[in-house]
Image (cartoon, rainbow, N blue to C red; front, side, top):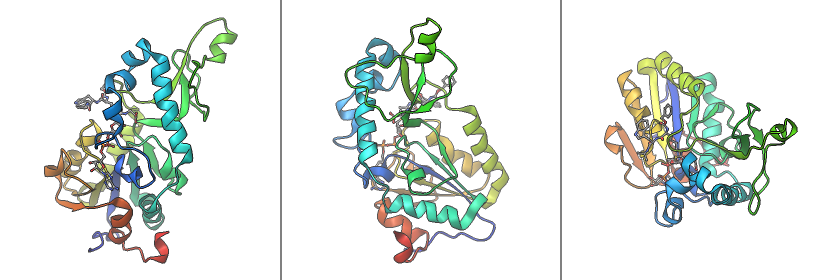
Length: 251
Ligand code: BV8
């Protein structure tokens, strides 16, 4: 497999999805046996679902938190961290994943589009989202800041649910990176079905500025036709080759 055509002026924007973490043993969403097979999206990944059954939602996210804490980054995560080392500020990684594995593999230029499963925030007050590895399986966590001022409010996972807006500052950073890169942009989507927006529309934005686009995915993605190049395979196996990493560099 030929390495990506990265020159001294290339700026690489990466978008990852659940497929990048599959080789770390973390379930994806839409494949057989995936998360959405055993849970209706509306019930567990929406504000309406949380309001109607907050314990079901906390159980769903607590089980994912447990899985994430037991998981380790895989070769695909490490390859992306190596590419960032090589490119510096000509590299930006945006992820739909909420598992934090990119940061644990050493990536630092990471934007989490959909939140982080090991972060919690208050439904009501403006306290900042905070790191939380507790499993709220049989009780609902209440906000102690609200309690101290006599209010009764639940804590919620720091996750972007369906129907909720993504962080405007995160989206602005991505737009800036794309417009500064222009035709020097190489957009690389990895391990994503391309079914969720606005993440799935990033390839269209990349094309509009004249950038090239690559998709590394195991199966056929919903937005595959938008990409200039498609590499079918497992990210843990493909990425080290695509980034021209030698075998000793790959782990
Ligand atoms: C919003 C919660 C507006 C976190 C998730 C157009 C524009 C804007 C919005 C919309 C639009 N059209 C529709 C919408 C609404 C909606 C949407 O996109 N719906 C879809 C279903 C049609 N979007 C939203 O609601 C977004 N919000 O736009 O708000 C707004 C604006 C202002 C004010 C108010 C509101 C919010 C989207 C975020 C939703 N949250 N999850 C969590 O629980 O994790 S989305 C969920 O899907 C996850 O976050 C996940 O990351 C994401 C995408 O899934 P994938 O990562 O692609 O995973 P999947 O399993 O599907 O695919 C994995 C792929 O990997 C497969 O293709 C497989 O082949 C491959 N693979 C497997 N193994 C490997 C591999 N590849 C390589 N190697 C391997 N080893």
